[in-house]
Amino acid sequence: MKDRLRRVGLLSALAIVAAVPAVAPAAASAKATITMSGSTSVAPLAALLARKYLNVCNHCVNFKLLQGGSDIGVADVASGRVTIGNSSRDPKPTDPGGLVFNKIAHDAICIVTNKANPVPGIDQAGIQAIFGGSVRSWSQVPGSTQTGTIDMFVRTPASGSQDAFQKIFMGSTKVFSGASQKASNGLIEQSVSSDPNGIGYVSLFFTKNVHTIPYKGVDCNLRDAKSGQYGGVRNFYMVTRGAPTGAAKKWITWITHNKAASKIISTQWVPLS
Amino acid sequence: MTKTRRRHSLRRTRLATAALGAAAACIGVLSLPVGATAAEVPICGGGLELNNEIPGIDPPGGLSYKIRCNSQVQGFALLSNREVDYFSTEVLVLDATTGESTPEQLGCEGSFPSSGFGCRGIVNFGNTISGEFAIGRDPCEESKSKADRFKVWVAATVTQFDSLTGKPFTTVTQPFRLKRPDCPKASTGKPKAGKAGDKPKTGKKHHHKVHA
Image (cartoon, rainbow over all chains, first blue to last red; front, top):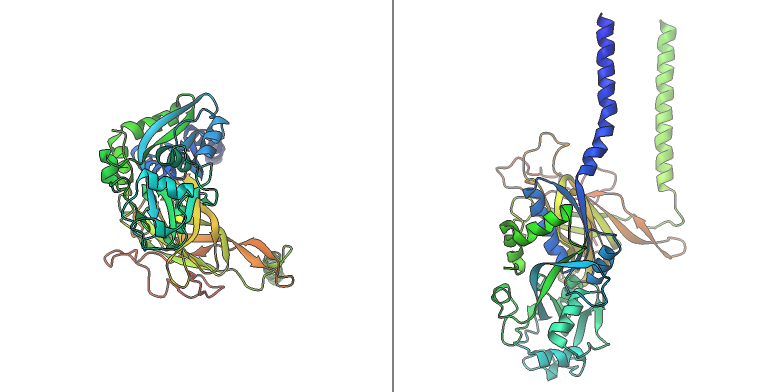
C-alpha cells in the first residue's frame, strides 16, 4: 500500500514537473512585447512612460526600446521590425504607405550655445544666417561673448529633430554643409557644452548643460512651450503600421488619455491637451 | 571494511584531481589568447548613488551610476539582481582630469522590465560614464540574506592593444560589481565599511575602481 502511494505521489510529481514547461511558454507568450525604435528625442519620454505603464497595468506587457533616429523608426515599423516607430517629425510624402502617425506629445526645440557664450536672443533671420553659413564668426552675432569661428552642430539626416528644425526655423534655407553632424540630441548637447564657440539645437530635455537662446524674445522653457508662446514646438509621434491594435493600442491610448501619463509628459514635454 | 574505505578515499582523490584538472583547463582556456594578447588587463569599476530627482520617476528606486575603465570603451552592459524598469537613453561622459563633460556620449537600449541594459558609443581612456536607471524596489530595503542584497555589475566592450604587434583589438571585460549606494543610517541596506572596496585588487570579491 505504502509503495503504491509512493508511486502515485512520484507520478503526480513527475506530471507536475512535466506540465510546468508546457505551461510556462504559454504564459510567457500571453504577455505581449511592444518593441520601439526611432527618435532619440522621443526615447527618454518613452522610457519614462513605459516604467509608469508597467506599474499601473501590473506588468501587463514587456517593452523593448531601441533608438537610431526618426527615419529608422519609420522604416522599422513599415517593415514590421518593430511594433512602434518613434518619430519626432511630421509625416513625409516619401514615407511608406499604410503608416499611422499617432500624436502623443509636443516638444520644444531649443537653439543652444555654450554656457560661456550666453547669447541673449535670436530671431529666425539670425538662425538662418548662422545655420545657413552666411554668418561664420561670433563677432557678427549681436550679444555674443565669443569672437572666433562658429562651430555648428546639427543632426544627421535620419533625425526627426533635423527635419523639424528645418521646417520650423530654416524654411527654405539649407543648413551649411560644413556643420558637424551628430547622431543624437545628447551628442549635440555634449559637443556644445564642451565647445565655447559651439551652437546647435536640441530637444528641451537635453538642455541641462547648455545655454538656451530665447527665440523671438521668448525663452525656450517648459512654461513658454506649454503656453504656446515659444515658436519652436514640434510633435512627437508613435507610428504604427495601420491603426494600432492590441497591446500597442492600449499603450498609445493610455499615453494620450491617462492623467498619470500626462503628468509624466508635463515634466519635460507638452501634453496634447 | 578497510578496503572499502581505501576505495572511497581513492575515488575522492580521483574526483578532486579531476575537478582541479577541469578547473585548471577552464582557466587555461579562458586565458588563452584569441588572436591577440593585451599587456594590460582591462578593468572597469564605479559606483551607485541614490537619485530621487529623476524627472518622472517617483522615489524610491532612482539611481545614478558612474563607471570608469582603464581602456577605451566601445559599449557596456549594466546588469542587476533587481528588476530594472528605467534607464536614461543617453549617457554623459566626464573628462578624466577636469571632470567636465566631453563631446563623447553613449546611447542606451534595452527592455523594460529586465535585468539591465546596454549602451554604445566611444569613451576615451579613463573618462567617466555617468547615467541613471531605476529599479522597481527601494535600493536600500532590507534584504533577506547577503546573497539577496541589491547588486549591480558592469561589463564593457573595450579596445586593447596587442602586446606583440601593437594593433588594436576589441575584447569584453569580465563583469565588475559597482559600489552600492550609501543608504540612510536607519536602513539596514547600508554597505559595510571596507566592503565598498575602492581599489582594484584583482582576484578578490569586491567592487572595482579604476585609477587612470
